[in-house]
Image (cartoon, rainbow, N blue to C red; front, side, top):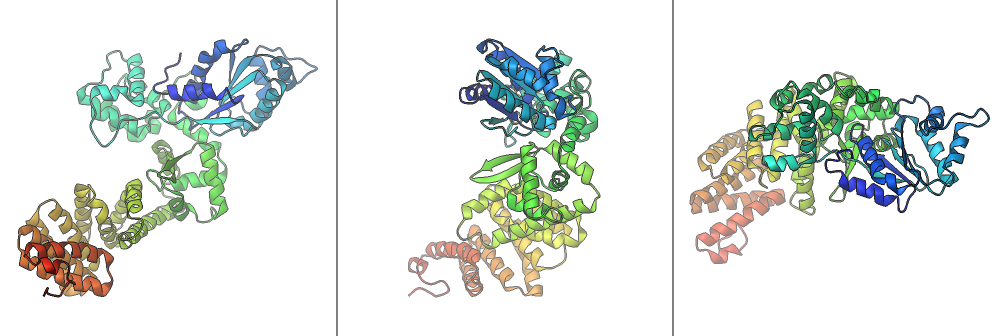
Length: 543
């Protein structure tokens, strides 16, 4: 049987579906392993059918009109001058218990759709399994989406044993050993192997092509060169269909099957990283000629063709473009005016969204905001880097880094420090944005227990307050001045700072400042022995 590498569940699901449906279609991106899974299915079910299973490869077909002829030929039927191939097949399958597998249907969908519908009508004993980047859309069809192989977790180191248990790594190791019997994964290679299969998106074809390179390169050497994946991964199985000979050929094959609108949306989606939601796609990609329903139709087309992988996350639909497909989009779109417009729209959308999230954070939906920050962090980081690369938008970079302050304090302090320090280094002009970034960085330093650093940052922010005279900046500076004084044990200065901050936040109706300040002011009053003052209105002494 074909090696499944963690696909046993998909195999079992496909097998079970035949109990309720006579047509099952395996969909997924090119190179994800649909053919291998269908081959395994054929082997598994061969004995379940009196006439066995018949596997027909359609990748070389150029016209829907020749599908029936190809299937008839592969089933061993001689052409009959007085009968067309479809009718001959109808008569052949009538009353026969058999499984017909049609592999690579996507480029001849009309012919496959017509033939499958006709044959299923002709025989109640026939079962059909098809592989295609989009469903046939035949009545009664059941669809299984074949996804990339699981890759190791990114948030922690894994042992060699855990690594080998990961499907993507297991495949890489098996294929590498087939071409290099000395290949072995040791502790020295664990991080590199994990990163390699992740960079290849867990895609079986990409892993196959990469493993072939491990005949002459080490894992580290291959990883160093993987950015040139379309040129590097070009030595596939010479017996495979042409579009499986190299990664570039495979992706171009997928691209050529898309409509002009779908190709344009694919190119614009290169502006994203990770898995954007619909609102993000509409904001970044929905300009002429892809406006309104045209954008939604193109999006649906890319999902149908398995270019975009829909992912339901906490009840929200997101759309994942594999990194390999994103790089292809960037290669085609780079330097174009359309790409520049989508990149600028991407940067502006995530900058504005982060700023709005910060303004409304202390209110309903706080948990949802944090979850979305987590889901969209790759795009926020891409937008941040874009702002830093534009000398005219360095203040916007300061604003974005500061806007994520709530994200930084939920377990991302080191990351927050890096962002804020980079933004502050990029723009040293005195401004409200720089002042906000300084107190935000001071809060990160204080939470790290680095009080001298935090106090130094607050002094720099205070110098800006004196020159720009921004009330909101001044009140937040007072809040964090009180916080550092409190942490240092200077209770009376802390109380004074918090009471000044409370009055300022009240005048500005600043919910964020009030929440942060009232909690700490109450704590300081209690520590000073003013227990009645803890419940008294802030700014007023207790009786």
